[in-house]
Length: 470
Ligand SMILES: Nc1ncnc2c1ncn2[C@@H]1O[C@H](COP(=O)(O)OP(=O)(O)O)[C@@H](O)[C@H]1O
Ligand SMILES: O=C(CO)[C@@H](O)[C@H](O)COP(=O)(O)O
Image 1 (cartoon, rainbow, N blue to C red):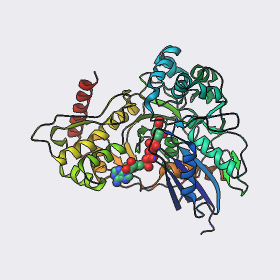
Image 2: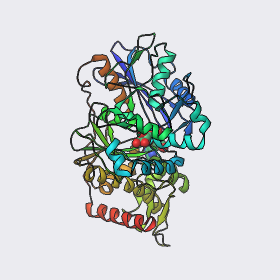
Image 3: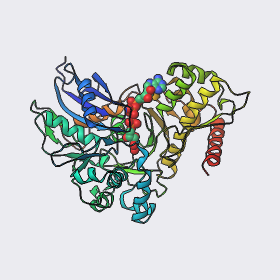
Image 4: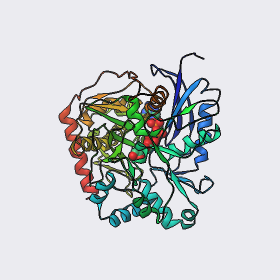
């Protein structure tokens, strides 16, 4: 135990609930906890609560003065008039809503109309498409629903309810900007777009300010508004100009801070709000860390074994190219795609090349995301900060600079979403115009070693993608 002022941050992510307790002044992580989420694309929010309880068991939060929750974006939690959950939450990676996303795009007048209205074009991932899917597929659930909230809103409200301090549902601009009914540019809801999706009005959480205290437990712990996981990571990393984050969790994301909103009608770049009053243009893929776990399972090795094999192969995997769409894909928008291996010959059919193709293919999917953040959103790419579970992979760290075509730095291992949420909590506790300055230790930046080879791989991947999905 410690007498230092403490704050806590939570990342209620796709695979797990991670909690960090930090020194409020320096950001030093002093305790951590973790609980596991079910492996599914629709999940009872009660399971998130179970994971939160497991993560915070044994007095993890003793002495904590403020807490904030960062969470997986876009998940649809429908509540009834008694705030009971109507049906399991539909998560960002549930692709059943691909068709209803297309319907919404058409009904508003096309992709440009959506990009102009809210900075994003609905895809299966976007909450509005999920609400429309429930309206069309489960009208009785929609009939019962009176309100819709996001995963981080729900866990924040549940913690406050449990702690006797619930004063009403809240969210923040960052997470709200991933719904399809909130405009990041104006920081205002578009109830007309929610009505378009749901066929009627639904209650929405109040959008709290970035450092507001939204409630207090009976023990006096203040809750800050929380935010979406990617906005949380941006806050945890303290991004500067030229920094682009590539996060390799269940999703692969590439994003940067921006001083203005963007409007990309291709739907590649989504113009989200960040958690500090700015903007966070972001590209998200459905296939990142789990491509590596599937590759390792296919080869009968663990993740360290996959690294060994991949690092024993030459760059380019002897001509093998993996399109890593194992869970369908979001960017490019190919919800029904499957993964495929191209260029297989008797000469290159080795475990080493296959492992290399798995690592390269996953990163090549993210290379287009980094390009889009630079070319479509206008963010300079001076260095890529690699975070998320799969940033721990030695092969990923080695391959990334050439494949991404940019200098790559790996921040000291850490749960940056949870740290960002903790930093928001520290900000709410201290007040003021900006979050406290917390240093982030970053390993040396690694420049691309063979940039021409990286460019060749990106060109080959683009050719294979065009041929497979004309
Ligand atoms: N050394 C490693 N090499 C490759 N992948 C890893 C490694 N360590 C963890 N992972 C992967 O990271 C993923 C979890 O990352 P995380 O960022 O916590 O995901 P999420 O936020 O989506 O729940 C898991 O799929 C896990 O297999
Ligand atoms: O949908 C998005 C971003 O738009 C995803 O990034 C989710 O926010 C899930 O993140 P992870 O659980 O993979 O970190």
